[in-house]
Image (cartoon, rainbow over the protein chains, first blue to last red):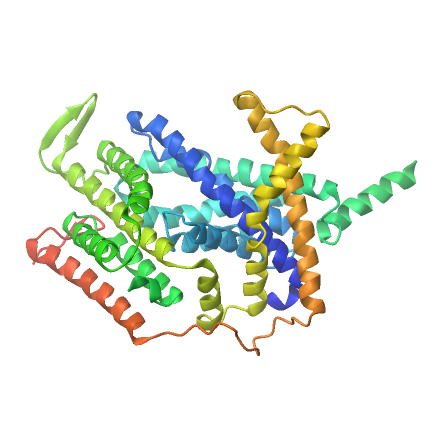
Length: 203
Length: 261
């Protein structure tokens, strides 16, 4: 896996991982605000489920740009390591949950043998990350003690959040980055250039 | 002292009890662990208590929120015993209070362990230790450290961008909505700049002979010492004691199954 990566792939993964690690940390604050709003009604932790997709986004962005096996997993893990290094209060266990989420996102790409990076696969990747990460949190956070309808609601909200925030927003951000031209040395940039040439020959 | 422990071993010592504690749904087990974590924090590490409280207090509110929700929506398996009080349409039973306090204490343990790790570990040393002890690929380690290096420059870059925008007549953000809009305007250029620099660093590293092979020497050598093993063993012993005391008192509860002596 690592052999197929060029050093510039790794450094790009790292930059994305570090930047989104900070964004992830910031979204804990957003989550806290949502929790504070929802807590009086007893729906506290659902606040986190609403925005849960943000915590998978770097997997989709990095995989969509670099298009190699293991990228989704590694970028997510780097983001988690960054959160811990910068001082997340969830500590090293966060690395573990980052790895679980990255694995979830990676599964979608693995199913297409890392060949297909169409929008629906990106959205599916967000969903699979949500799908895989939920049982992990079920176990670690003791969701076991909640009533089953609440668990189901949390699960469905997380799947939707994964599809919309991680899949859709992730693709939008990567496309915007590709437009600037800095990704021309990566598969996504080559796709943009090819599309551009095609449309210009039509004229 | 906890500062001088090997970062990888410290991470393992912090993760292990966090996972093993997930099995317990009673009050005694996490309470004993939490007391031990506080002792470690206050007596065996040289961290700034004020700074510690600054992080700990807001996070403990999250633990309380979690406890509150668990108390209102307890699974039937745990909602046993007499009704203690009613809140709107919710009847709160003794079992619900116990399980919610258990989850709150567990969260406090996680928070305590995390802060202990974050406040006593140097990020670069943690990466170097991951490379030397866990055999993380040097290509990955130095790649990550190189990416991490651009973070401190972000603030400077942002200032530059803001000034450049203002010179060209884009005003300062007023109001909440505008500020979000501005963040969108800055985010892509900031990221694009970082990616450009990262690519240059990668090329520079390779041109100076960095191959990323594991067969290399290290400037900073990270070692595992006897005290590292001692730390992890004591942590596990305290965890076993915590479970045992709870078992002896007849309060031990694993995934909703009461285990009596």
